[in-house]
Length: 154
Image 1: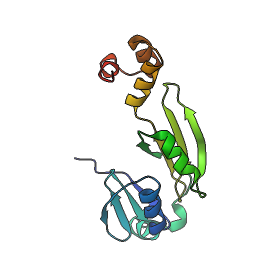
Image 2 (image 1 turned 30 degrees about the vertical axis):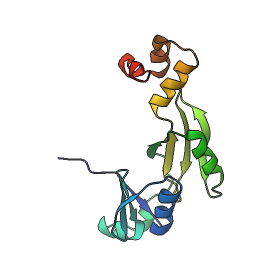
Image 3 (image 1 turned 180 degrees about the horizontal axis):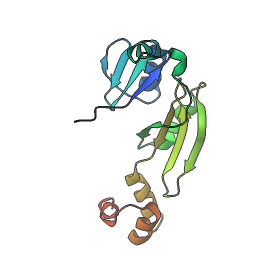
Image 4 (image 1 turned 30 degrees about the horizontal axis):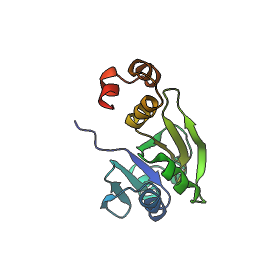
């Protein structure tokens, strides 16, 4: 068996497609009308069509459950944060914060209230700590990354 991708259900396929293309720079892999898959490895599916496929009333597909998220990494997180500020419709779960392991992340909702997390790659976190003068051992302890990974980031 092979896992293919996560699929999230959306109310408006055009609005969601536009959000993922324009805000998160995702490229469409396939567009089947009521189902769109992205090169990043996830898909969106129109709620009305999806509810028919699984034989449930649309009201039984709940928004804003806060029980999952789509996770993205961005090398230029500061520039991305500025881009987000220019999108009036963004509703934040939380603005920029640093995780206990040092990674900076932001979480917000897509148009259908699915959580989206955008964080800096761990390689960037390691390089940031090393550039601030932390030793390899201190960086391993702080980031929880293996020493081999930290050394590869030098």
